Length: 442
Ligand code: HAM
Image 1 (spheres, rainbow, N blue to C red):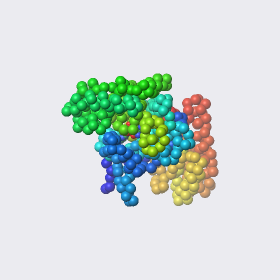
Image 2 (tube, protein in one colour):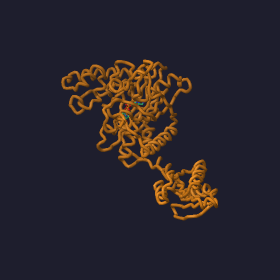
Image 3 (spheres, rainbow, N blue to C red):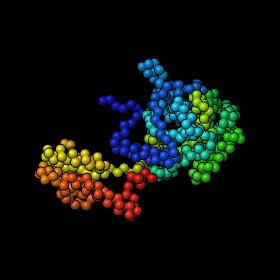
Image 4 (cartoon, rainbow, N blue to C red):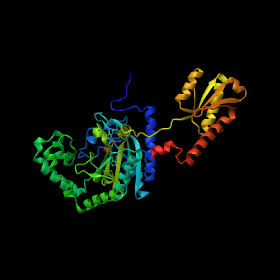
């Protein structure tokens, strides 16, 4: 038997129905915040991700799926969505159309990581990228959108952790201070951190191994090295978060794993026991140099990405998976060859009119067909035998009231439609909200 590659998942219909619902909630919130969808290829020229040798992030150095295509071109399966979105922004000259472009994407990403809880080799990201403004209010808007999505699902205990990496000047004096501090403890540091000390000292702060050691806790904090301008930007982000009533905690050890960040960085964590690092459901920040670095005009930008697997895992753990209405409007039961064909015709008419219908294609026994109608959660069951067909009549059973009638075949569609409408009207008049789907996705 050929099995799926390690670190990947099959999403079966029981799951895809939830995923579709989650994605539609996300799309709705994106539209409220006026972010527009972009779809980029799943693979890109390798140089998009392997830009410079200084980039020390694990994602870029150890985790990409790189391959040569048949034309001998170096290609990489996208490990994230920011660089591809920026590439498309530049290539399509989107900056010429409007000053601020607010984009979102949903799709798979690929990282050759050791699979563990909430960590896959193919996973799905929903991300947003707002390009064209350095306003702190845009940093806040991204965080606000993420919080709106999370709150809409009813997920509780979610924490926004916030930090700033400041501008070039702030980072460079901070890096110097870190090197000075950590050099004293080099012997006690883990092998990765010894490397980071040379290549990118900021990433030491991300270390999970040395995190609890005293020399780690006594490391200098970025706050003391921020330039006036960087401090102002961060203060304004904090102030506007307060203004929007969004709770956050400032975490000066938060540096993020990717090397393109400038100024604001943040992570959003769920609070699910035993999830460990899989609690990080969303992360992002500002990346004011990336567009220029990739050959575009100097364009400040900010964005974030959710890991959809992790978000859905958190929703499941908290019992907050969205409700999916699986009611079938009509299940057709037929007895006899002609009745079978006619049922299929009526069913198609009803489907074209917007009703969800199903029938038994294997023409099992009457008992078994009734059971299938039940399994399909049918609102109505239509029973047609060759005899009724001779009179152009059909039996229709309302499975909510158990009432059964014989009606003309032509009446099936309006009969069911009127019933659904009358129920909807009733629900509206008692103000309970007819559409359960809508309600659950708010
Ligand atoms: P990231 O932190 O690398 O950031 O990934 C964002 C989110 O994707 C993580 O918080 C996590 O939920 C999910 N994720 C990452 N790797 C995996 C994995 N192996 N399995 C499952 N889920 C995973 C970025 O990718 C940036 N591009 C975010 C961004 C957008 N920054 C600015 N704009």
